[in-house]
Length: 555
Ligand SMILES: Cc1cc2nc3c(=O)[nH]c(=O)nc-3n(C[C@H](O)[C@H](O)[C@H](O)COP(=O)(O)OP(=O)(O)OC[C@H]3O[C@@H](n4cnc5c(N)ncnc54)[C@H](O)[C@@H]3O)c2cc1C
Ligand code: SF4
Image (cartoon, rainbow, N blue to C red):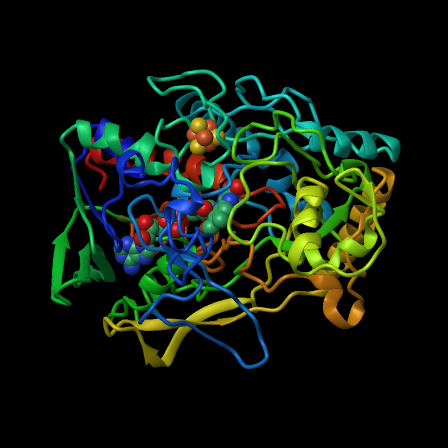
């Protein structure tokens, strides 16, 4: 986003990219069949979401470790390719609502943002028009409507979810995904192949590589340097940024790029790492870190899931379940103005249906056959299965008879949740790595308990049975490890006070006026809404500010 905005404003930009070049049209695998590969699409270390997935990277990158404080968990997903994780993200593109910018004023926890929804609203609107997003105008509290393309109709399993939720008074809305249901800005409408995670050869969904970088390159103002692992931001005697030093990941040689302005957008924690590794006599605690907040207030979304088994969907008649590569509906947070046992909220994402099965689909099917009274129209006894004819029957019968609900909730910002440089470990480029120290609080654990109870209630209201027992207090109600939802934010927070924040309200470092951040680092809170639409709206606002300041010769 920053590169496109700046290049179109006439600014010359050099983009350092740790991974290789990537073109979703030629490098993606949208049209491949599992049987085209001897691996049948199975995941690998550098493709944890499957062999054909659009993102190269993962939780565990060879030669690029990170560490954790004893007794803590944190899983850090990193992309290593042009366009980063936008090549395969879920495209759930929810705006933050007015209340999300002022939580401290509402419930006393965390902090308010230095900007309001009204400050960001015009950028959300322009982002919607530039990138394209579908949804329905619902006027739902604290879930602002956008400039929406028409939403696709709910599929069969999604109608069942809606029906069950209606029975117990839980609202269901059309999803808000950055996928084109009508052609727009020279990009074709989606043809409903359902393979968004692989990238889109018709550029019908959003990725940086399909929507932002081609127009930026067309201006002639953008130079992309691939395989360039930024090591640190260089500064002069006055402490201003002069450029970035980087390691070529092929030759391991070190290079430098000089610049009038440096914008960091390496993903929130990588940006914090770069700043913390950029120490100098003027910045002994790391760059932009006189406040000692860089790396602190680290947040992810809470995550937990429940799967339901639905006998009425057994032996399903073949029907057209085509759609976008994501759910057509979602469950927004419906108790915003009610008193609950925890602060903040969560939304639910939905999966199911009879899309093309990926490698490992219906894994564990042998555990379900005991719940089936019929298979392929024939009465059957319970038990058995796990191999042979009965296993095949189970697959045919069960395909499409399970539906999942996933909770994604807010984590409250707390100073002690942080990442810092590990003094003892460097990566294969000799760059010191991050050490994470993050814990859930009771708030998040109580929230996940509420999710589990409610998701089970929904499944029963839909006429199904939850698969497995509800996790109990000893397992923290099944909350996933922090970092697992891949929504890490907050480690270079913005604020009006230079003593308690790294950046001002324009995402400009308080300590270094020609240094900016354009990823999720500036977030002051992480509402349950997925972060990327807000990352992009903020990045648009920040880079327009930079272009304006450059044209006024203030930078
Ligand atoms: C499977 C999955 C599903 C997701 N679904 C959603 C969703 O539905 N909705 C949502 O809002 N979010 C979703 N997310 C999260 C979303 O992808 C991220 O919030 C978003 O991509 C973050 O953007 P970013 O530019 O900050 O980081 P990234 O997309 O990670 O990009 C960072 C870039 O910087 C490069 N880089 C890193 N370090 C360096 C360095 N030292 N030097 C040079 N270059 C470097 C990387 O190679 C990469 O290109 C999902 C993520 C995943 C993995
Ligand atoms: S579902 Fe639509 S947007 Fe997604 S990959 Fe297929 S054509 Fe592209």
